[in-house]
Length: 201
Image (cartoon, rainbow, N blue to C red; front, side, top):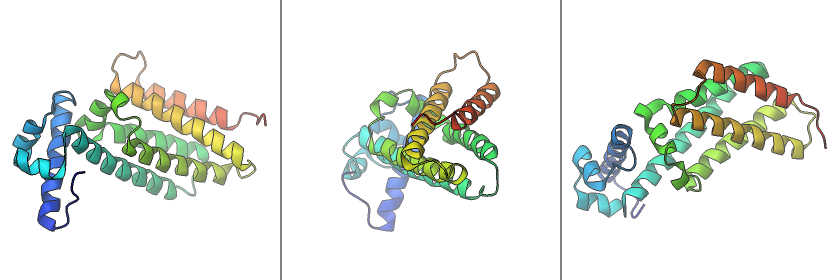
């Protein structure tokens, strides 16, 4: 951001800008979202928007950063609530959480994923990856305490990234010959098999 809001009124203006951006992207897609459209929807003038953001890309990045933080914390909260459930239940509920989150906000993240090459190296992507990786370390260390740290780290990385990529790829394209329910089942089966596979180290 060009300038961080300090006063409540300024914070509300920024929130209005971000909410309008989310709506605009959800309805029209990233490519057809413009600063004038954001201004029209938010009721904030273009000049006022430029007081806080240099361009459209900076607005989207701030919005993504907030969404990534919220999503990551939500995932952590879900896992902490499931301390007495089996690994199968935790993974199954995590997959459900992932699909629901990606389709939330009127499809905002789905539109972002269609242009993921623009955001895959962004700060928001790093924040989300950090949250998910920490969840992986926590969950798998709880159920597979006999793993050494290198095994825990490697398996967490593979599971988090392969699952995220599969879900992101699926929700952003509508041409796959597989129903969502079947994909969730296949993901669960694949992850459980991988977790129980012999350690080759």
